[in-house]
Length: 196
Image (cartoon, rainbow, N blue to C red; front, side, top):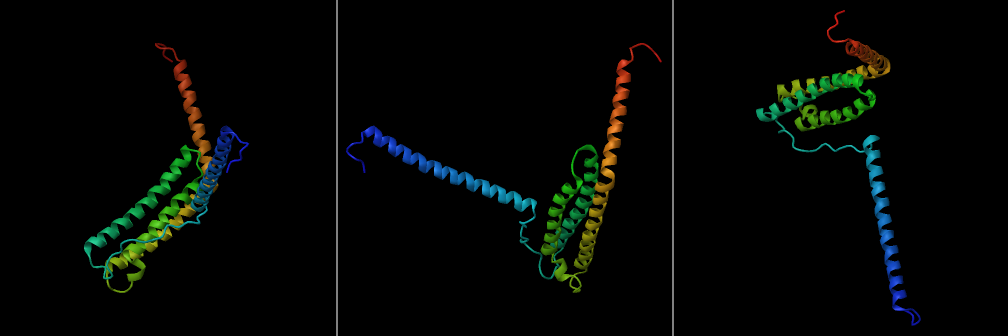
């Protein structure tokens, strides 16, 4: 309610000031909420708090459909190829770029492990292996287990590389670049038509 001593302009100014405070309060609440959501998302991804649940379609309980079995072996082959390729690509990238191989490996490895577990779930490898229901599943389960062991071994390779060799490799790469620059300077300094 307005008092009789206030002019219409003063009343309008009070109403605008009140709405401005309400709007700024809502805006502040939105900004703080957005910051909290972003912070919790970053922490959950980088600290490993959040894990993507493994769900989805699974092969039949008898594991006798060739189409499903082909899909399983295809996924298993992708896991093997990706593991080998990422390991040696990472080692090559570490030479050319100032990356931390351990962090890169850890980030990639988390995703690979999730795919490895998802394959076990999708293809029922742990569930059906050793039950004589499908020799293909038994073989795939053995390969699947060996992939985990190989991943652990490759993790050791990356750790050893990062601890012992990455600095040396980068230093040698820098020296090679310096020699290349020296050769280029020599070539540019040579005058055309003069033989040496």
